Length: 143
Image 1: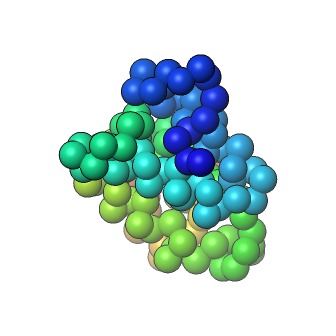
Image 2: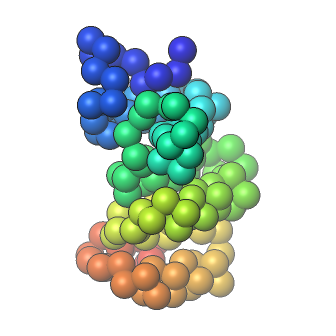
């Protein structure tokens, strides 16, 4: 089943952190489809409350977990990076859900880029959303 599992039938009170851990576990086991299904439940609960799906609303950490998991898969793209078509939809979802990117989102996106033009575009995207940048973000820009 896909309800997020674990924890004595907590239902709607299940924390987003527990769901994020389930997403991370699925991604680490190579179950990308399972992670996307689980995220889909979270998304449906947030965007379609009448659907009856009981799940926490995705947070910035949720999207960061998925981006990092997709980026770590190493299947396709330059230098083992997945092509943008495999993760770009998450950025669209961030906007639909009203989830703000943070410095980890920006660092992960920078790491996923395959060329300088795309890297600059991501840097501008982050700056336009006033994402706070720190040494880690600069490291990924330079990398």
